[in-house]
Every structure is written in structure tokens, then in C-alpha cells.
Amino acid sequence: MIGMSFKQMQSGFFDRPKVKRAVDRATFSALKEIGRRVRKSAQKSIQIREGSAPAGHPPHGHKTMQRARVSKSKGTTRTQSVSPLREFIYFAFEATPRPNVVIGPIKFNTKRGDAPRALEHGGTSIITTHGKEVKATISPHPFMKPAMDRERENFPALWRNKVR
Image 1 (cartoon, rainbow, N blue to C red):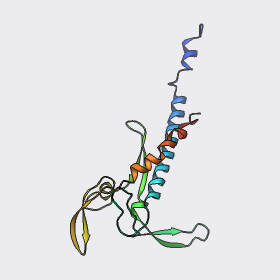
Image 2 (cartoon, rainbow, N blue to C red; image 1 turned 135 degrees about the vertical axis):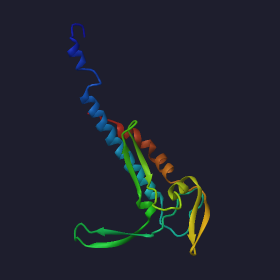
Image 3 (spheres, rainbow, N blue to C red; image 1 turned 90 degrees about the vertical axis):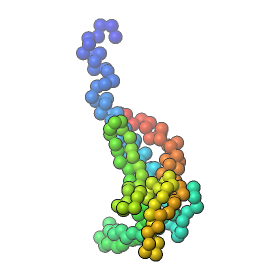
């Protein structure tokens, strides 16, 4: 250390652009994997069943939407019934103010409120039954927080040996 010039010392500083890029790539990679795992865990917790789930348990999914699926080997298209709640859980990387990942269902395009938020935390929503709109109180059916809690123990391993 004694006898090194400032230029030589500066080349070893941790704020060099190369180190910052490596840390940014590692952060992006780890957060992407965290988002993927929590999303998959939340989707698996929503079981396809008739009726309502008991309060405090993940909601039941109902196949109310048709999705076109293309066979990769044959190239044929077929329709498949799917649950919108299960299908529309996404994750996105958010770089500012500090890097993180946002995971959850998208807000449905309705005038009646935020159904996914009401399912997770409880609340009121307007539902249509027999052609009439009725205000309903929804008990909490958490599915995102339990999914994150299940995967949380795996988070440190996703960061291990990432910066190269």
C-alpha cells in the first residue's frame, strides 16, 4: 500500500463502473428469480374449485376465461378454460428509488373496484347476481403474502455467488 499512486489505489475502489454493473446484473437476476418463484407459488395456491373458499384460505379459481393455446409441435390452436385470477399474476422489476420486484395480480378492468385487493385483504365489492348489482363484503383470502412467506427462506440462496 505504501508507495502506490492515487491512480493505482483508485483502480481498486469498489465504486468502479465495472463493479457497479456486476452488482446491478446480480440484483436484477436475483430479483427476477424471486418474482418468478413467488408468482408460481401464488398460482399454485389458487385451486380450481366451485364455490367460495373458506375465510383465511386462498381463494378458489373459477375457469371463466378462454385462452388460445398453440401447440409447438403441431402448430394447431385450441382453446382452454382458465382462471383469470390465476393467469393474471405477474411480476415486474422496479429500479427506482431502489431496486425491487413487484409481484401480484393485475387490476381487472372493471368499474366496480379492485377485486384482487379485496380478496387479499378483505373489503367490499359490487357483484352482479341474477342481473342485479349488489354490494358484498368479502372476507380476506390471502394468497400473495403466504406465497412470499413460503419462498422467503430461499431468498438468501438466490443471492449467493451472483456477483462475478
